[in-house]
Picture (tube, rainbow, N blue to C red):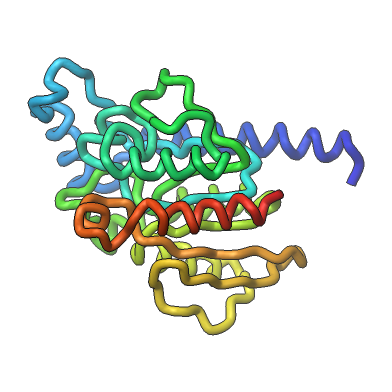
Length: 243
């Protein structure tokens, strides 16, 4: 493929991803999630009462041609649902961006708003479900409704991908199921655990790696189930594989 063809493909991918992002933000397919995200944005948490909440589905964040795709569960009610950027404005995001920064994959060690100057390098972050769910627990139908966005995004970024990081068992299941549905040749998918890896040769002949990590939620970080060293190990491995 010539340089001009590669340039055109990159431009087209960027346009398609931008269109997909717009479709995500406009989505109203799940009545329970629409109602919840709006209620949270209206009632607000006391600490953020003077802030205007995003209160809509949250788009992905990062580069258009990622070597690394990080997949989370869903936006936090007072994090991404407030700020409008994935993993931004709550404890989970604090842990994730610090780790990405230490791995050389993020410009800043913090992510507090869409205007804070944060940038990702070689990396894109998305979620299996794009709206904040009550109790952080989306239903099966809500997961399936949102999967059309994940399917399209994965299809668009797959040519540049080398590593997928699944944060938590929910994301692990969504990613592996989607890869199988896309015809990727996965053999003996292991059960999720922190640090679990699955390597496969894609339909395009390129080798790729799926890595599992415990989600940096407070229930994992407060209890010590996930430490910064454990998260760093996953992110630094992902970074090394893209050099």
